[in-house]
Length: 228
Image 1 (cartoon, rainbow, N blue to C red):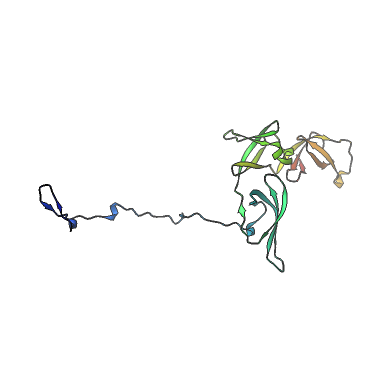
Image 2 (cartoon, helix red, strand yellow; image 1 turned 90 degrees about the vertical axis):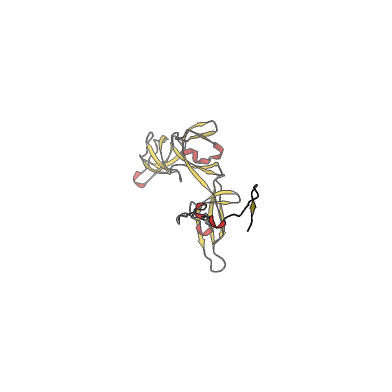
């Protein structure tokens, strides 16, 4: 036992037995909710998870799966055959993956913006909440601009903080501005004729469609759907 001496020379022995420490004063137990894990869930995306519309990263670029087919040959390993479209360039390629092989997912986010106007070679989109403008170069937008009208809501796709693509509504209304009135045909047999719409695009329409009328067009195929 240790002994201390005061300045008066009187020894002082600490009374350890009279002092009590309680751990409750210094430590508070922490109760973890079973619904929350302290570790993030890790999900490995593989070729077996591929489906139409999946966004994957191949060779450092973002691609969208357009078609896929799981193949199990009589001999050899199974594989997945895909058709991919590059979000940035618009090019399509065919690529094969081994069944079960790990694939990097492309983290792509989507935001709705309204196309407001065209400023020279740029298309200007606006966020109607923040009024922030986003400009896309005409050279980066492909031929989808032929269905783009002012005031149309579109979905902009972001990858690594940059706009890489945009999506149109699946169906849009277009006004017919030019059609050959002299073209005759048997409407009962489903004849068709070319018609130019307000954006300059040409659509094959039934013979009964006339100039000034509105039609519905599928932007994915460019085909006539119905007359408004």
